[in-house]
Image (tube, rainbow, N blue to C red; front, top):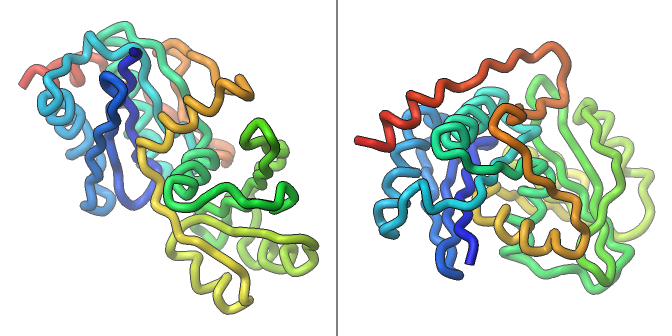
Length: 240
């Protein structure tokens, strides 16, 4: 069986997960916004706890975004460093799908195929990132309607929508949906959800492997810089 290592740093809490010998093990770091100091030691500890080495990992997964700018940079940097240091291929997963599959770990696929699942991520500055998902006999499919818009404009646009809708996203958005009487489920994305997504992707084949040099965060905002990680930093940390 393939060994997978995933990290999630796009939101308030970070997490690391490993799929090893058919089992998934995960560490959730509940210290808010302290990803830079915690994520690499967490990777090292998770590997150590499960008597695994980085050289045994066949594939790395990470949330490419959108999400917290700082968190995305940290996640992409760590993944790039790990990929360079051990020559491991990477799968970049959409942040919208990480939220969706985290929710699906707690919920069940809607009985009605026409149900729209709307992922809403806090973009700060009064904005939200959003994308719609639907289900069919092969699992999940989605419209390519990723967008960033003002929260107020988004809420107004939803008043005009017909059909059953389930909203999922960041906890801090809960009150806006509650006030409108819209069904909203707060979600904190976790790394293990990417492994479920990768398994389900066999039906849709939308994910692809990339090389370490191709790892970049997806911000959905223009003019956001990206600086590559130094692989030596990763090697030193994992060697401690």
